Image (tube, rainbow, N blue to C red; front, top):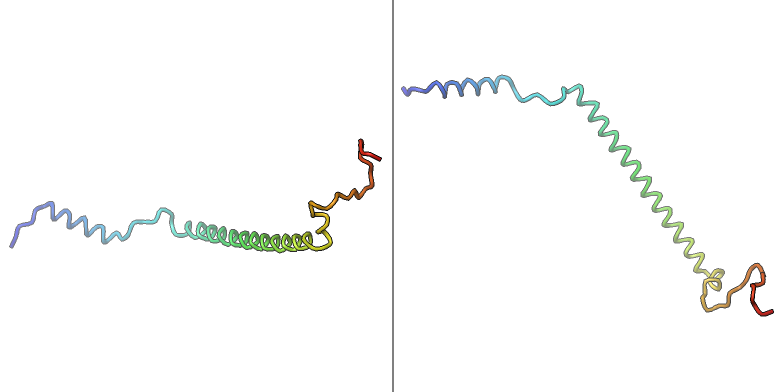
Length: 100
């Protein structure tokens, strides 16, 4: 039979004590953790809703911009945007210093 030192016996008792006490306790007791998790989940749900709204708004604005560009490039607006065409004074006002 081998003789064991008191140090190894003490370590053995410390190990048994750790096993008996169980795992380390959580920083917050369980009832306190539940509201924190619910708040975290609620925050993520609200952020998902905001993200969806932003994506929908951007998509809608892209469609409206595309429609506006199609209208502006159409034949009704083409002459007004043509830089080679003469400038039309829609108010028929006289420009100062112009030859009459």
